[in-house]
Amino acid sequence: MLNRIKAHLRVYGRHIEVMAIIGALLLGGGVGGYMIGRVEMADVIARIQAANVADIDRIQATHKENVSAIAGRLDEISARLDSLVDRQAMAVDEVGEAARTAKQAASTARGAATSAARAAIRETVTPIEPAPPAQHEPNTPPEWLDGG
Image 1 (cartoon, rainbow, N blue to C red):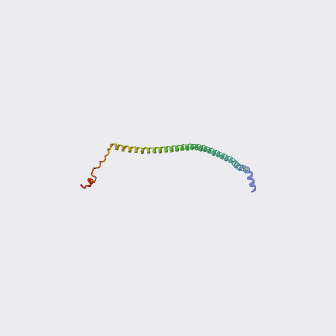
Image 2 (image 1 turned 180 degrees about the vertical axis):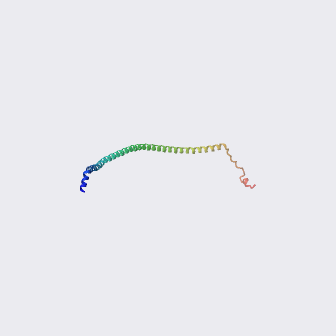
Image 3 (image 1 turned 120 degrees about the vertical axis):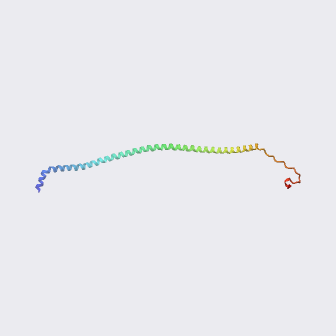
């Protein structure tokens, strides 16, 4: 049996040797490739992280600019609203003063109209003069008490 194995090794020895070398190369290449891949993957991950940090910084800067622009506009709007509120308060005061003036004018006009109406009535209506008292004798009762 040993001779048979030796014979097989003589015939197929070169093939087995080549297959062992190829297997060793493949195994070494796989391990080496894995190691090299780990190093390259670390570099790739570091580049991706740097790119993400740069994108985040760019987005934050853009948002800061937008927020500052909005804040400036909000200050302008707030100032305009304060101005409008002040103007509306002044307009309300003016309207109130005009209403008081109109009320006083209406009251004065009503009084003047009443006085004018009374004066017109006095002018057009002739007053009735009271009848002179009846002359009767001092100790006689008036006619209407006479019973007659």
